[in-house]
Image 1 (cartoon, rainbow, N blue to C red):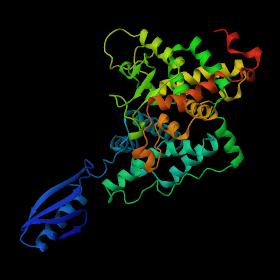
Image 2 (image 1 turned 180 degrees about the vertical axis):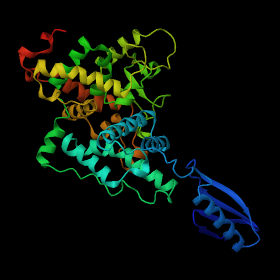
Image 3 (image 1 turned 135 degrees about the horizontal axis):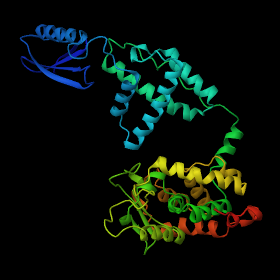
Image 4 (image 1 turned 90 degrees about the vertical axis):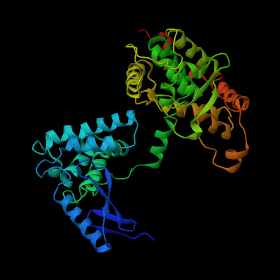
Length: 401
């Protein structure tokens, strides 16, 4: 059996007689390095590993003392080392900049990572809770880049940063009245009448956003699944949309790869969008901004929010006040269930696992069954909705741009 031991920052392992592999983290790059040590005995290999560890401790493999990274550089390094995709890293950077802005006002003399203290991180948490009034989920998002950078600095340079300054700072668990939380969750699903008001307004006044919202509300697609849709993924003749991997987006899991039938309203909206594109590459995204660039999640979120504010004031529908784009997917699931959709087929339609041996390995749910089990109940809910739920004097047809 190969012998191994650790000397300081270096772990050694015997590979061949007289040959040892030394593994360590280079503080300059943060990468795991491996070199070969020639030794006549175990004691000789340990002695060389101890000398190598002393070199690392003396910063011969890294930067000199006094050249510590700034807080922004540490957070940027953590973001680059993360496994998030490009869109996720943009969000990380946005949250990191929020912390840097607060730090510049609250502690203007703190520039380098060695100057950052746990009390400062705790003060930022209190600022997000009390002054900004953010929810627990939003606070966790803002604290994430700080925790990522703190872990990275400790792992890469344990001698200079022996302590994780952010670890003692914990985001408090969500508290509140369970009944109020259930009521907030119920608001995520719009009634059919309110959804019709929203889609009619988007079609008339914000046509670039209308088809994306229709895909979410009437086909149950996730935000990024809708934004990454290509012309080749739309079969308007059969009324089928394909969710698959593209150059811009990878589906969330194996069950998210799917083909789903859609209502005629969605097919018509997609056909109109494709008709406005120049003839050419069918691999390109179909949803473009005024500048001709593909929609980003942030751009879509801002556009929909901009459309919802005046719509809430003009219609008086309370659900529009703080509506979020991903709630449209909840609206689809609730509407299909209300129409009597089969639960197992609805999970397949939404791209979720059925979670049992029968569903995962034996039961086959094809397009015809999805049309019968999901699309027909959805159409029943959508077309037989009670339009009197919206005050007649505030219907969208009376809204003038």
